Length: 409
Image (cartoon, rainbow, N blue to C red):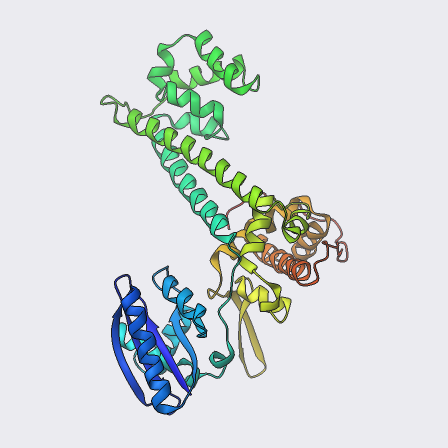
């Protein structure tokens, strides 16, 4: 039997082909283009013909998009392509005593050796996501960009007008953003009349903010200890971040609309979305990242793929349960984490689980991990059986505590 290991890069890939007895047939580089692909296939087919052996698989690290074109073309040609978690490659390199050195050639050797080091790689298949995950992943990335810009805006406002940060709960609300865009510093707010500020606030908040809000803002402006922005640099930065946040919010709306349109006729997405506490975008993300449920033998396997199963260490009669494993689909884990907090507030079943775990002395994080595992159990059942969500209430807890509303993971 033969195996191929490929260490991918943008311009060139490093490949190695070896047999189960350790014999290396070639170790060479080939360009990441049509000619390079033809060279790789020619080398593989020549060795197959000379040895009369078959190729058990082509192994590459699941990193970035460098190998995506080759993966697609090789799969179309009928080759078995397996993407391996980088952490597993690192561990394999350590086992082979190659951990002190790392280069493309060594990584290609390690990847080609995997099926002969551990039997699981001979049967292991790469997980296949549904295409909709590309849009839900984009949504998550743009959300992170929005958070970064909000934090930068918050930082500058804290320097120039710290009292406003303490008074306003939602700094990125439409009303507050418009107010700060027009009058970004306490000095600017004091230069305009109270009536003009009130008119601006009312036109944006639809009556949500009134004269009391304006009076309080002007009062805070008079006594502010913020840094005087004499050069207007902070004012420029604040306006820039506000404009950026608005553009990102508009982009998120467009992406959300596109995801909704593309998942309109997908029954499984609708079934997940029917779970109270899960939004349409999160349902689409769960569906896209999990892919076909047939890829997982049990719900436990899916939970492991989601990265919310705890590490277990055992020695003799003792066993320790640690933090969740890092070998995971991080987009799926992020989605499950957000959903777990929402479900604890809006779903009867998951709220009862939260109560039960808190009564056992678990922390909020531990309770949310357990909720996330239950969520993936339901997702696995929905996708595998094509049946709607069915509530499974646990034993009710006495004197239940209220779920924490903090969304920090």
